Image (cartoon, rainbow, N blue to C red):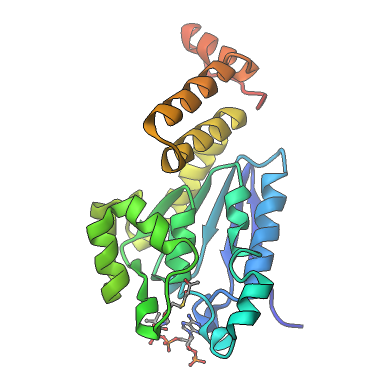
Length: 258
Ligand code: CAA
């Protein structure tokens, strides 16, 4: 039996998904993306989970879509089967916070997967590129859309048109990643952060994620209105009253995730 392309473990309220095709630098094929989508939906639907981590190996988060399987596909193959749409976009349905822990290569679809996560923690060894142009291809898993939103048009064009690779420090400076940490601390820092986040009120986390994501989709006026309604909805939450009263009582809040 072949080994599973992902491994999933639970640590308290955190679900950790490890991409597991080391011999191919975690190249993203259908088996992996199907399994990743299913694991994400399982963890998202599990009321005992408050945050999700996606990680790779020390050498590669993921080196992109699997070129070996794509090389002979035709337009009809990818159009009719809904390549990318059919399984890569599952991550967009996830309402809980998703953290990417990236060491080594995050290239092409691997970089795009990191961009689709909510927070990206990069090890100092992390390298980010959208090198599809070298294959006469195109970053087609959201890269041409999310990268300019993350780092601006000038830098995104530079990366997409020249295949420029960013090291972790550059990626941090440009706003592609949230934090950079030494490689030896990647997993512990990420877990500490995921545990911290998963301890907060889950419906509040979901409302915040939805509101921040709205900033990409809506005008400022619509986004502010969305945010205001999300704030008003907090007053229907037992956790919000608990959080504010706990502050006033100078005690730790006890959240029911309701
Ligand atoms: N697809 C399939 N196999 C891949 C792969 C990929 N994207 N990336 C690496 N591999 C395989 C290699 O073929 C190699 O396999 P063999 O040992 O069987 O030869 C193995 O992984 C190790 O790779 P390298 O020997 O190349 O390792 P390296 O350390 O010398 O180089 C690298 C690492 C710079 C990441 C290099 O592997 C590389 O450039 N990979 C391709 C990156 C790329 O072009 N990604 C974009 C893909 S297209 C895409 O993602 C489209 C989209 O938007 C959805």
